[in-house]
Image (cartoon, rainbow over all chains, first blue to last red; front, side, top):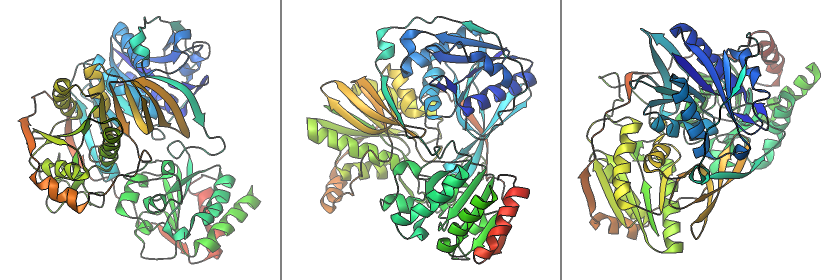
Amino acid sequence: MKVLAFAEQRDGKFKRSSFESVRAAHDIAESLGAECVALVVGSGVAAGAGELGQYGAARVIAVDDAALASHANRAWAKAISTVAKKEGAGIVFLPASQMGKDLAPRVAVQLEAGLASDCIALKVENGDILASRPVFAGKAVADVRVKTAVKVFTLRPNVFPATTGGAAAPVETVAVAMEPADRVTVVQSVAVATGRPDVTEADIIVAGGRGMKGPEHFALLESLADVLGAAIGASRAVVDAGWRPHDEQVGQTGKTVSPTLYIACGISGAVQHLAGMSSSKYIVAINKDKDAPIFGLADYGIVGDVFEVVPALTEQLKKSK
Amino acid sequence: MKVAVCINHVPDTETKIKVGADNVSIDRAGVNFMMSPYDEIAVEEGLRMRDKFKGEVIAISLGNEKHKETLRKALAMGVDKAVLLKEDGERDSFGVAAGLAEELRALAPDVILFGKQSIDHDDAQVGILVAEMLGLPSVGVAVKIEITDDTVVCHREIEGGHETVHTKLPAVFLAQKGLNEPRYPSLKGIMAAKSKPIEEKPAVATAARVETVALRKPAAKAAGRILGTDKTAVPELIRLLHDEAKII
């Protein structure tokens, strides 16, 4: 039996979520007495792919083709399912990144497999995988079993450890024939803002709500985020009010996040917001209202004025650096 | 242009979820249901496409009798037709997708819209499963869709930015917040929707591929500590983040 882990890379650099899924694949493969094989797809990707051995891949397969220079979801899905079939993989892992979520359903259909998406825990029981996945934006957790012979899982970024320890793995190149139809949907260009990390990938998030009283006051949070190398998050109220862009919204109708540290500033903690951030490892709440629901979830709370506490926090963090 | 919008009927975002007696689904007692918020964006986009290119928008939902409420809302927003694919039991995403794909194959729309995910099971699978089952291109998490003849330019959200994606119709698109501001149904629309028919047919049967073994509440967090009421608490916060949480 083989466990195949798809590793996503951008501009020749692997994403941390890819290391996490290779490591998780390794751990599951070990419990099942199976082999962990990593897979990379793209153009010029074979050269650096041996690095995945450090995260537990015994072998790495590269579908490395100049025709795959720009991302095309059908071509990528075909590459993954073709390699999975060729290897006889019984289990396929992808990160639940935007790319992984785009590919996994296609891969599942091609492999006649069931798909458990956005898993936060995996456990081997009687030779089968029991996967836990948050539902209703984390208000509940479903323990699920994939019943098909081949099983596909996507893993939520920032949840599984990316433990290193292995040696570089041998890389073997596999060709997958592509047709024009595989490239009907193709990425023409990528625009990524530099500077601050994305909320779904960040280790630390500084988030603001209605208590910030206006879009101009988010500068206070940006200063704090800069000191911490953090992403900015926002509640639905402030996004709906147009104070912050949609892509920063945390909650049931925004992003579900699992950072190491979530600093909630002027956020009262509506049910739908708490759902999106309750899996953060540490939560700090700064809010004037001592009865705000956010304090029920916070590890550390300061019942005080954000306009006084946040600048003091930023200053003292700067000094302690 | 023929546009199909697939929509789901889900618990309101303010709902506190309780686990049902069967331990695999939620307790529906006292829960308000609504159209999944991303599906509202998909309906709005469908209406705009129809108004621009002429043609019709058809809303489709797979589920029990209650899904008619969400189909009525789509009719009130302005869709031309509504179809309920009846299913009284629970289905996994694959089962929902298979039922929708069967209906969509017969309809053969130019554009198929979904919300980027339904906010109940948060699987974010159905739209792309349907695309693959029908052999159609797809663009997920779309924040901009521009159609010129049969060529489409989309902006798709990715981590920390967006990508510009080209594709061709017929295609499947998954709506993300930011694509548009969904309209509120007008009173006239609501009145008109009451008399519009909803076509009903059984959803084709499929076998589930993913089984929910248990549904449970996440482990409750231990109560935290209040460190103070003003900036004098900041040094203690920094100490805890450093010594206890070991983050900074």
